[in-house]
Length: 316
Image 1 (cartoon, rainbow, N blue to C red):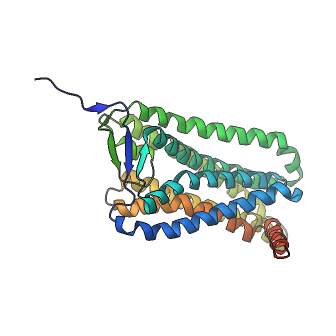
Image 2: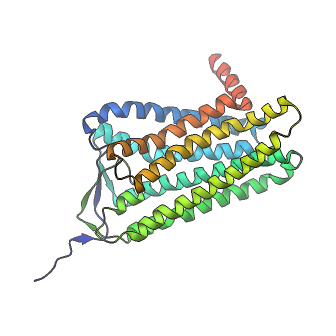
Image 3: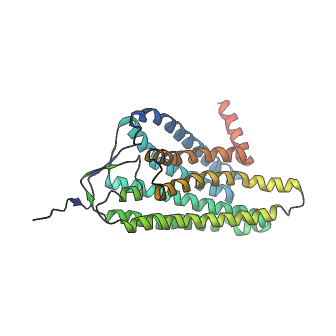
């Protein structure tokens, strides 16, 4: 008897299902997703504009904040437009190269976001613990090197995911993905081959990288708090804590849903697929929308510039 191998090196098309079990509500679910995405575009756009045109915001903290805004835009834009096309236009098809591209930018922006938050924590540590050396430590040249290093590190961490997927054979040419976007482990599980390497690399390397970022952030803020509570006046302590408040809020908004989604996907077989996919979609759109709002409300320099910009627009 001749055995036929029906697997192909790469499928012609993937079909993104959307949110399983809620297909009849896709049109309505798309409305809040679209509104939140617009808020993310406008908020991060205004933030980038203010940092670019206002010389008073040309400081290391705001440079890292502009990096965070650009990465948030990349994160949400990599996933939300395709999700909305599934919800409203039933455009479920995505090519294998398109799926790999979307997967790369989603994972890359996630790892880069984490790295930027770590850099921002270091910035606050230097500003509060060594204020007299702040300008000499975080020079423009140093900041550019840090930005390039973080971007390159994130690229090197995520690029192997692409090659790990391209080596896998898939059974059939039109394969259903029970999700609204392509992500590494979800696509790998559709292959007709052993995916142990994909699972261990796709889970261990990014998660260990993010955990190392979290540890360094925790160390930075532990040292910051030690210095803050030794300050002689209460006003000085409140001012120092106020400069870190917005960053801490953004850290919590980023890491809490991220770790829940990762751990539920890896260790939570009892978590319903519908809930997991809905949560994963909210994760790529809500933090990018809330981050500029948090910084706009809690950072005085940005808040003042937004008020000035708003008044200028009223007089147009």
